Length: 196
Image (tube, rainbow, N blue to C red):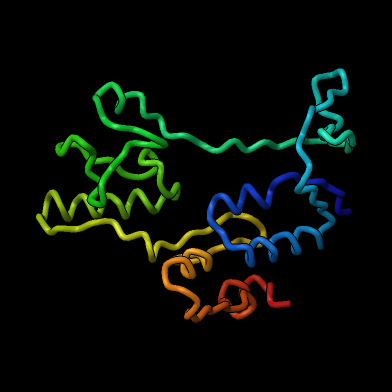
């Protein structure tokens, strides 16, 4: 049996990560088809305890409550920049770098999550390649994240490559061609029989 859930602010959280309104609507529809209800405009006031250390309800600021068996909170991650600050490196949401991943100290480079950029495992590998080309092979290289594949591990998964539609319109105007390919035609979808 599918239990009824009430998810608050999931769509905004995922949207802040990376994806387009179109993908978010598909995700919301898929989750609603499983019995999940969304309360996107509600702000949490309090988690109510059952007296035994477990949450039994969520109270919203506008006065309503919903029963809850489990509350999951995702706060995100922040790079640990203490050592960088002690070393005199400039930091904001991460260690500040230029387009070659060099810090304000030309002898120090930073890659991956610690720069505060994309937080994907493969990004650190891509960044390392840029640094290797610059330092070891003396091939001038700079980062170009325009073609980085990105995925949000939801069910269904959401992924894209390149600019979001809003970014493309901002950078290139209205003269765009947008390609949307149905997941049902993907090899993985066919192998997993998700073609309906």
